[in-house]
Image 1 (cartoon, rainbow, N blue to C red):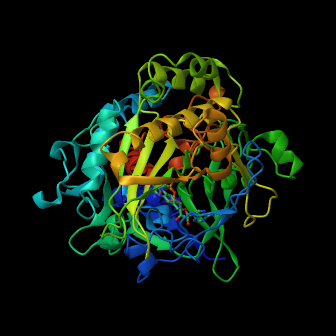
Image 2 (image 1 turned 30 degrees about the vertical axis):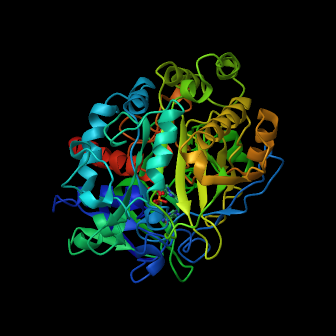
Length: 550
Ligand SMILES: Cc1cc2nc3c(=O)[nH]c(=O)nc-3n(C[C@H](O)[C@H](O)[C@H](O)COP(=O)(O)OP(=O)(O)OC[C@H]3O[C@@H](n4cnc5c(N)ncnc54)[C@H](O)[C@@H]3O)c2cc1C
């Protein structure tokens, strides 16, 4: 086997991994080696054309992770779930929405026992990651420049001009008691506004972590990437209890041959379904579970693979009375608190459901969610777009997204075999709070749709069927139609060890001397946003920490 060495070995050249690799290699004295299971993706139009959302799913640049049937949603199967298997990772195949979370959410990262992780450190990291291109005045899209970064690496811009119906959608949200905001960035994510894409407007191509953080810097001699290299497990130099030392990583190359690389520091950036399985195969996880698979325990860490969080998305759609001359409009996002969703007089049932601890959510996370509620943090997103099929009238979609689900799933290996898919269970709606909340969110969307001037555009409801307006009927609609946002996180939680944590605030895995996780799996509280903007900011801040600790 070929042996290469580096100061830092980063497993996964995805969204977070390439940010860290880029920032560390700014110092020519530091060498970084990235192992990426996929290829470079160069020339793949399903990556570069950001409007082709979904075209890459099910192809060779998608992992196509199998998922378990949803026990609490009529045992429905979602089949396989997409994750990017290519340089850039999921930033290369995602929906390309680019936005960030609320200050109240980032401050809860710190309140959970992670000093230094709060809005005052994340906001500068957000700006550091972004290069914002303001829209033309003729596009009729508001923004606030100082909420954006203008000097960072990920290009962001609004997509095409908004059609006139958008002003009526905004007016109906306001008429139904909501608020309009000029720009959802900057830490107060409340109200309705347009949202940017990660794209370079000069040539209308997608900005990924590979186009932003790798390709322009691949000339650096200290920044090496091995493609088609699937890491299987950590190779230990010593397994002294409480202080295990990694010597490197084993991987399978494109010919199926096992190779190894050595490094002073091992960083897992293989994503929320990629990093926990590598830890488990390396002996880090629930010791009893690992013993059942014949794996010797190195660190007994029951939080590994647990606490998997995924925001659900429920379709609410109406037929328009006209066919608009656009295939699809840009996205509008309306972010609202639970108090807004229910109205002030209808909170008692949801409060008692929120108080009940019925899931595997740790007490610390449960308390954090209660504080978010008290602070009236954004909790429900309405993800809004108008699209026009090849024939027939246009369709208004106002998806209901639960930003802070209490139900938690898991990802665990099924054998010690390094390339076998893990078992993934989302566990949606295990906690009745989630189902009831989303049903009320659907009613809130129906109220907005029935409010002028938007109501004047709409004919029949497509989803759910016309007349389904009561909580019970909407709960069935939710169970039968909820799909992923693909914002998975939390499966290698940054939290105190006694609260199910896997990494400490320096992102170091408990019980090890030199193993870290830097990807969405450590993020402890969901942002009121689509996840990539937060992952970029998180990884920028992680890189700062690594540099400080060098
Ligand atoms: C279909 C889809 C749509 C989405 N839509 C949006 C959206 O519109 N807006 C938004 O903000 N967010 C969106 N997201 C979420 C966002 O893209 C992710 O949260 C984010 O990219 C995750 O970053 P990450 O670094 O944790 O993982 P990833 O970017 O997935 O990186 C993990 C990397 O590790 C590699 N890897 C995994 N295992 C191994 C191994 N064993 N050996 C070597 N390499 C390995 C993978 O190939 C990949 O390159 C979407 C995600 C998906 C999948």
